[in-house]
Image (tube, rainbow, N blue to C red; front, side, top):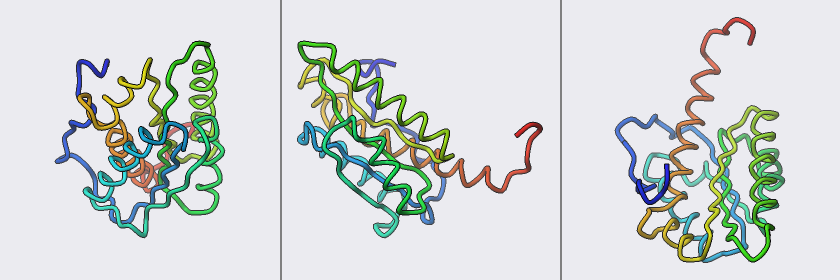
Length: 171
């Protein structure tokens, strides 16, 4: 759904699971840091608001969005995490560079999620210009960092829930 049709920061907080024992990683791109740090604040504050402890949130920075998958892999390898949230911003420029970066990051995080069995959350903005990025990093369309945190909460809890569920046929 287009951000213009939905504020990304609105969600049903009554349906969220207990996360006091879950561990989260947050990997933040330094490129476009005004945007990515606003995403981080929204993400971190949301995790805390919903019961994550500061001791169970591990953060690292990488130079750019392209480095998010390897940063996520390194962070997950160092800590026993339930979900890793990757935050970045790739603003469209004069060339198709943004398409290559966005595709590589999406594929990298998907592959890493499947291979590791850990949710790797794609919290990367892909706006056409800086104003669109600001609108999605705490502006009129909410904060994509909040949405990424809610996704991590739900996926981390699902991972824990399915650990104890009975095995299905074929899996």
